[in-house]
Length: 190
Figure: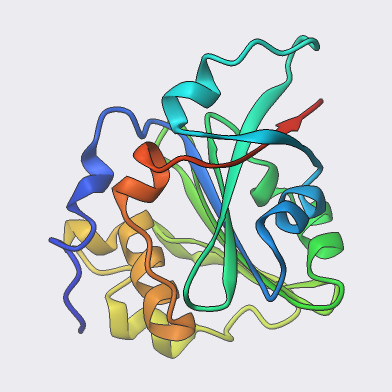
């Protein structure tokens, strides 16, 4: 089993109560925001700045996006879950691949992998037997390799899913990107 507990120890940050990260291969951050239903705005914002932005619509919120060295763009949402909605993942993945991890405020989390307009695999990292998609077992070997379903705390949730994404797709994610880095922002409306 691969290590990763220390790599994702930042997941215990109290600012990360509910979040969703969605990775879209081969598109710009602005396009990634659009594919998840966000209207890009002209400024870059940190998580704190995005949270304090007034919105004209009740129930609207800010998402943020960045281009990664791996050829993927990431959309970061705090206190929202656009990237965990299967219908949006199907649209966003029509001509590419999309990977997302969502952690709810109650501690439930979900991993999604979509490609070609279909949700190929989804599972709950804390209950890997709860899964689905057109190929629900696509990442079964990778899940075992990173310890998903094992008793080790770092692999019993989003840390295990992020380790799987790191190993399978070469995507690195850290606390700085989620909270502190100024990223392209987009307004998501209900």
